[in-house]
Image (tube, rainbow, N blue to C red; front, side):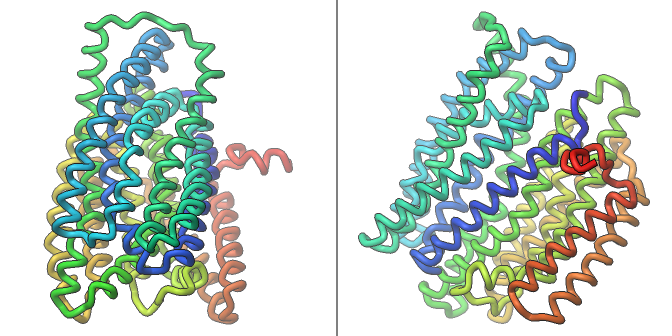
Length: 504
């Protein structure tokens, strides 16, 4: 086990947060350019694209990471290279097939459920799956070898490419119509995929020189493909289920809100507001994703050392997850609406979407941890089953709640909260059956106590001076106090924080 979970996580969290903030600030000028109506058009194909990304990147990259980690831990570099080479071959085919299927489904959606103006934003996304298929191979390869630097910088390159090219295209195409401006924004997603892949390619040119090239026979390719397929399929299905939970809202919002008397223009604007709220909520999810991303190969490698080592890795990951999820949810609940109002000043804040989804964020992040444990212990089918149980719950509650005039758009957020609460409980019960144990002190008492202290301080500071500047000051002070408490309670070891080491 080459690196601790915390050390590898810090590397990727820093870059991922930078990339996420770049993406967030992409939404701000884009919203100014094309308005909330244009953002509504932009969000329809983007939410449809999420299951595509999940299909191409989540399952294959995790499968590759697991096989790479298992062989790298025993220094079987020959087989590591063969896995990498074979993955490139099959992922190219997958990317091409997905692009064609995506086009076919898009035509059906635009003729039935989506506004006609979403056609051009949708077309701009079609090339992206091919580039993302190669990105998935590199991500799985470096994740398996526990080298988080290229993964972190790839996300940064993706964000920069998406913002730079997307805003430029939106600005240039806007005179042709709002739908073309939205198409310029979605073109940024394709550009970001190309930029991220380019960074991987450049990094790999230097890194791969250390790895000898070995011939791969046809029979070996088949064996590797079967292993990848066996791991990737359930993980991809589970990841698709998670993104379908968000896609359900785009399928029902138009029909249900029009049913209770909303105009199509108001419906599209509300969809744009929900989309930007989701973007704000996704910031802390980056940290949960980074923890689970780095923990997976650690737990896989620990299995060869015995159950004690494996339990230690699971414990470390869940402590980090709990110590991040609780303050993230509470912080968003207290100051989320002020931050949203500042970032998207032209959008209404006369809703409770942020408060509802901030609670959902806690369960989403905890579920990341449970899912990584199940995947690392070869129980990939369990989170798949539970995710689709959640999907059924989401379908029922979204369809019902969106149709109630007094709830309206809030039905989308409430159904998401209920869905992830159920999924989290089901996956948690499954982990307990696999020798996972709760550390009451570090997973419950310390995170709850520290979050309570942080929350009170942020609430008081934010209430005393009702100014946007004070909002950010309260966030910084609250985060600093929470970090101090984590070190004081010895949840975080100072040796894993490079800046403190340099100061020391």
